[in-house]
Image (cartoon, rainbow, N blue to C red; front, side, top):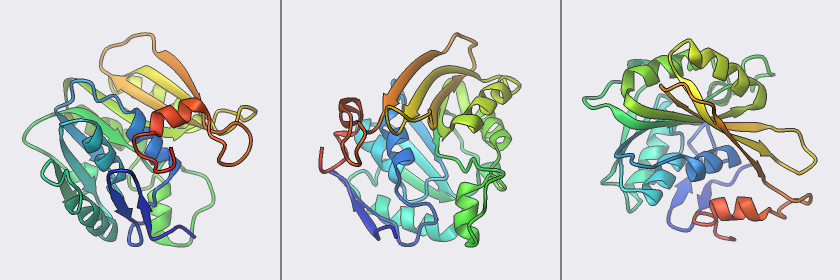
Length: 235
């Protein structure tokens, strides 16, 4: 059972109310997201507020974090309002499909619910946090097209299979993959996760690789430590 809170170097995340707990996927995206030149960032499905908080620590952008699950929305408000960056993060209780804003965004990030055929959790809130019934990949792409500025980027973390399907689907919406981070839990593992970066310009994507652990639990690779050292207490 997950702890009710998670301490990072510069902030604390309470998570007892949130359907989507702190996990490696969110930390990876928050640490890796390309914040270059980003003045306005949108975090879709913020959950505990983790990614929004990580990005606020990394840059000076104005951040909007949206969450459709009411209890998770309250949790993210609690975590963000108690942080040192509360003046730069605005939390809204909204689904992406209904969300709009006056100004466009330079960067959109999301750790979306990407499973479609796997066994569901009997808890409806937890199931919705993992399965794409209420936020499909098409929803994300349509929303990104509507909310990003002309040169804006979309970044998200997905499982290997769903991520590759998204690359093909995104082209039909005018978004092209420009960067792929391929993530393996162990050196001997298959690639399990992809962090994908999309833009409107069609280019040959760069490919990078990241392995999280050497082979034994909690024996982390140097590359993973370097990526997350500004956040984890034990690095």
